[in-house]
Image 1 (cartoon, rainbow, N blue to C red):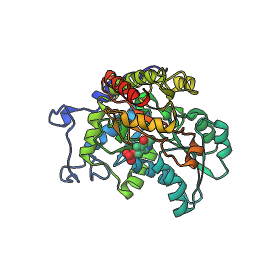
Image 2 (image 1 turned 60 degrees about the vertical axis):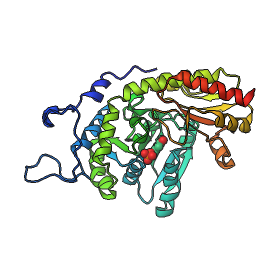
Image 3 (image 1 turned 180 degrees about the vertical axis):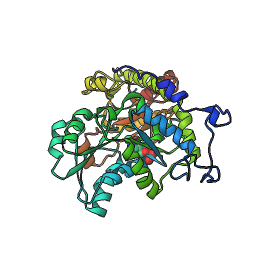
Image 4 (image 1 turned 135 degrees about the horizontal axis):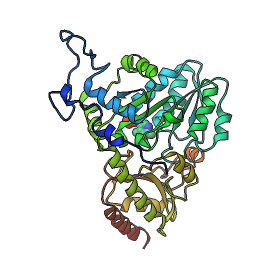
Length: 383
Ligand SMILES: *Cc1c(COP(=O)(O)O)cnc(C)c1O
């Protein structure tokens, strides 16, 4: 695994604190204001849809963590994704994207942009580089990746794809929500735009919806006044302040998530009631070596397939009492979801999601509590 990010704590905790600018306040205040007075002279702020000190501090911290020139916060991850795509797309575009990308993103690329503007697209399995090259056409001008596709856990070869794209003038957008800036920085490998949903690990407390986009200076400034300014999906100061609050602990939360994730994944992998665990952190994952070569750590999101088929999986799922049940992930709480239950056969065929496959996001709790709960659920399901 790659070495821990040097100096990350300084960026999280103290970078741009500047209490002298805020009456000595240790925590950057919430500038709950829509506009800034011109009578005070030009201090760099005008209107909160464009910029605001409470929004700017977490933006600059995230930009530094991702090794980009600048960042923009949005009201949601989808707002950041659609802003990035609308900035780069034109009516003749062809977009190449990874199979089983986040579902609303898939809908936006394959249906919304197609029906509204005639934009075409082709998807490829993230781990299949040959399929990627085969998907690119003369018209391709955008490649849309995810660091690790969250139900099937396949990882694109970001560096190779970006090298290929650069030679052809194709722009690469990557959704790095999975890894967070703590574990992976795609701009270093040649990506043009990185986006995150702050509703997952960056927020981390299951209490905010937010998004962020990181890129070079010109792209960020163009989107600030273009897609963010025009569509208006800006973040509000209070929400931005919650992102800032969360950033201070992102690195230690990710460390704990990783320890807990690996503990539970290994426990499940040795259980006779579990057929398969799908997690890049484990040696059993087909891309484990590649993951080790690019990541500084692993988030605690993975899938497992209970033994005995889909009916047993449904029973086990219902007998698990301690974890939350629901679709999101990346919060303090362990939460389970069931992408492999009653799945549409076409999607199953296309993605390779297995019958009975369960997805789990391991939280920050004591893993003994989770293991005890799995034990009682195994007892009820299999004995
Ligand atoms: C949740 C999620 C999003 C969307 O983020 P919102 O903040 O819910 O709009 C985008 N990409 C990935 C990978 C996600 O998990």
